[in-house]
Length: 306
Image 1 (cartoon, rainbow, N blue to C red):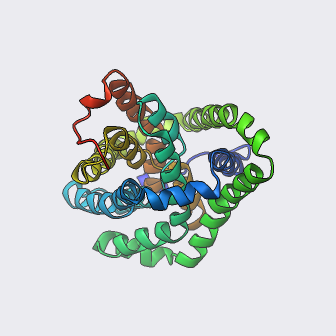
Image 2 (cartoon, rainbow, N blue to C red):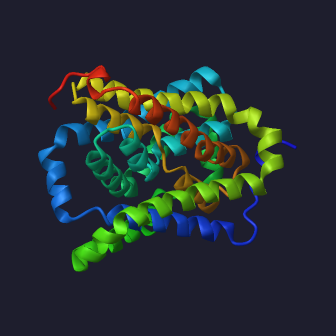
């Protein structure tokens, strides 16, 4: 069967469950946030700018070059561009904490990149996909509406984030008591969904993983490298280098899956890329965090002082 004829199995309301997982994760992220955090983003503009530049400019550019080198099927190439255009994932906050990085910066980056995704995700995937003849042809067949995609991202990410911030503002003591358990619960819930996705699509992953495995491995490494390179070039403090690196290497691939089914009819190559990312970036992120957790902060090759 051609790879684009493959469809991931979401029986039993799995796609609705995925929407719920993302909303839960975004609500949990927002329990750590208040308006003062966004004011802090302004005063700490350098590391935040590094993360946003790496996520929405450098990573898509790396992805485009990678597509030119690997020459994957058009649907796989489009899936790579979509994942690169997604914001950072909540798992990055947990991994940054494990890596002894700047967790507060990671949370701020996740929040800001999530808000930016309302515009940047549809804009980024549309612009870069139209630059390559194969993906441009696929985009013409699909007739993607960037405005409708922006509205979808707003509903999926923006509303839960706003609800969590409102809850934090209205019930600060309750929000503080819920932050840690909610965060760990949402991470466990997300990993559980990845296991569910893999179990429900075991044959698909086993039979077709060869189509996307190399691309996903290299692509994820490019994400980590993009974050690290920008953070190093701006001479960020070691804790900030770790936060930015992990933030860029961990994508919200669950959002990517939802957008693929909402706007690309679950196109096989795209769905396989997003599904494989959802599994692999957990493994890669845990590996990076474990290595950094064993190294003193002064061992991170960056100059102190942002």
